[in-house]
Length: 242
Image 1 (spheres, rainbow, N blue to C red):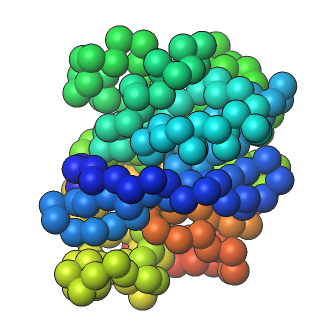
Image 2: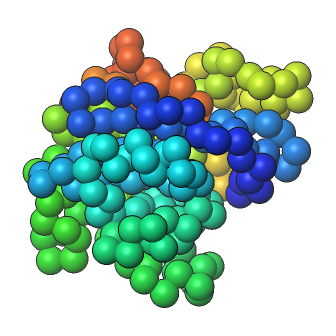
């Protein structure tokens, strides 16, 4: 599941909601051509929050510089981290945050700070708390993914624990996504479901996430869900909630 990048330039920033954008980039995962998405939120003081960063190409940096100042770079799970450190030479004032367990995997990221299970006034930037909620998806140590809600827009921001590929880049990707259960609907990939080690912890996190006022789902892989988002979310996590 760890992407081995063969990136093309990310597409231009796409507006999703007020103060929320995304940029997609093509990658190759074990030979399968896929897309990944970085989500950008503009918080108080025109400070930019980058979630699941893609490659910091000149075009993308120029687009971001018109929106505000890159203040935070977030690697939201133990797999989506390959470009996280690449942003810091361009934005040395930015803070780097990562999922629990990532620091032991990326010893080279000396500035990396570890996200707590939930946002905490004492340990995370105060600027996040009025606009972002966070819940770590417990019970899946392979990922330790932190799922986010952009509160002003009701946008759920997810990396790997939920995926949906309505448009595949190749026949091989179509077959893989069909086997993984993520081609025709929003779902937790079968590969991730097999990685659950503590169903009670996963269930507790799913209950928190499903109680959020979700209006939109922004997926790293591969689409943005604008219609009936809350219902699709509950259906995707229903196997944990039963």
